[in-house]
Image (cartoon, rainbow, N blue to C red; front, side):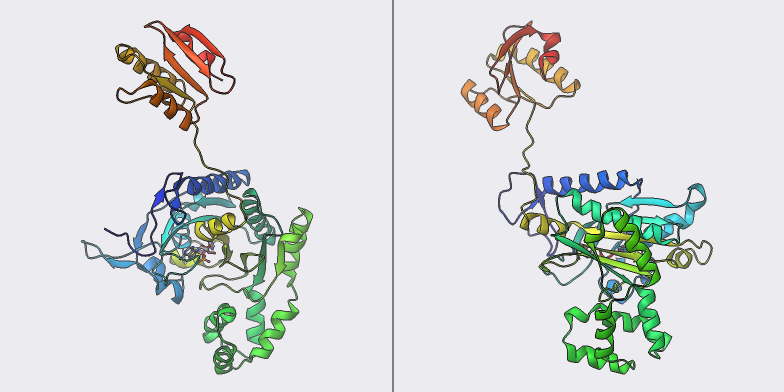
Length: 412
Ligand code: HAM
């Protein structure tokens, strides 16, 4: 049986094949995400992987709606696997925001599902670190969130030479569209054209733009001038004060595909431009209101960072640590008569917090010793009789014989 295209199996290291996904690398990424999020005062939340279809058709925009894994369940409900976390977050916040002090700073690491055309950096399932800040309109919140994004990537050993945050603003584009005589009804269509600029042949873009009364030359000029709005200037200064200026660049080519963004938007890219976006986010000040049917109005912003591109980048830059998980102790059972008491020792050491291995079935002493070496144990332990145990430090080769109950005291 083959697995579905675009889905992954995660194996423990050492990996059987270089193309296989590593469960250890995934855990390493999750741990890093959690560590930095907590350092910034974000709390973890989660929601269901299945949601009513309507939650995503309301406001995510065409692109994601076209990629939904949706179906009818046995209760005849129209449902969908979640393609992103933001609508779920908006629903959760709207339901219980009164119980939380503002601004709300929450993070999650959901697995998301999108029926995408498979390509480098894009699969049909991925894990995404989401960090969102709700209930604050000041650009100080935007700067705080972008600082978190930068520090998350720096936590993996990436530097300003490896990645850049391209900062932009839908407000700036809204002004451009309005001043150019654009019809408000076609604004999102215009944003979609800008979003796809880098990936579309110029002639095709020109045709689409002129249908809305714009020209590629004007659009290019606006992007090249890259004049920061007052809001962006504020964010740049805030980040400069933290010493993060070199990680960020104003780039109006970024506008984001999702429909709900209202103001500042940004994406993280590798400097060499070899990979797809590492992360993307922005302000969505109307989404909570929309999802709560007008009941709760709260400004919000956030970003999502996927595990797929991030892992490709870390691999390419040689930044993944070696994943072996050494055990603390191997209990050698050379005399089967001592197995019951050896099991007791194994159990007591585990209860004391040590990672302990032992031969499940009778095995030759040299085989046991080899296994202990493969596991890179710090100590081996062997019962001398039913009262004493010999503990050997693998590195120093020092040996000590001690009473059974005191064994744990001789482990580092
Ligand atoms: P997004 O730009 O659709 O934003 O996704 C964010 C990141 O998730 C991308 O930059 C990429 O790293 C990863 N990603 C997206 N699709 C795939 C895929 N098919 N395969 C692998 N990785 C993928 C959002 O999802 C927004 N909800 C983020 C957000 C949170 N905005 C505000 N708060």
